[in-house]
Image (cartoon, rainbow, N blue to C red; front, side):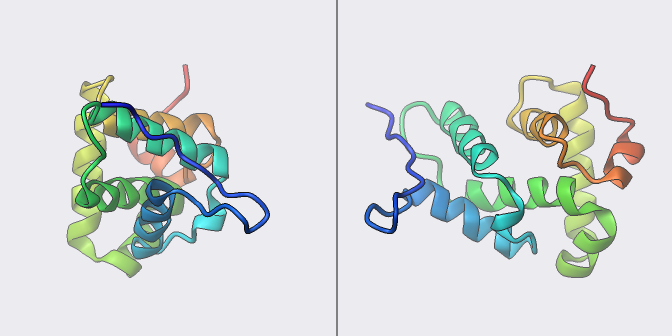
Amino acid sequence: MTRRNSSLGFLGRFGRSEDLRNLDMALRAADLHPAQVPEGVKLTIVNLMKDQWPHGEPPIEAYGAVGRLFAYCLIGPDLFRQANGDEAVQDAERRIELALDREGSLDAQLVLLSLHAKLVNPKVLARFDLSAE
């Protein structure tokens, strides 16, 4: 199966691709406005997702999980807790802890992306002792 390319749209004439719209909705649902994430970072996220599902499109549920983890990394535990609750914070923190042991996993790549893009929240940096070395 041929991998579908993502599209940002152009001058309102060509629409945004469905994968980017799904990611934007997932970020919003996790209380992170998509405008706070550079378009290049969003393109990288959807491409990382496509790498995890090489024989088809990522399932719609995957966008929610990715959006929640990425939102946690960017807005930090306090704001994330206010918007999503304690259980969502615990889930995001558990996923990050597991990602630290699984360097090639999608979650590890998302954490690393937030770090390299210099978007990661300082409390998340300190909590997990993250560095880009």
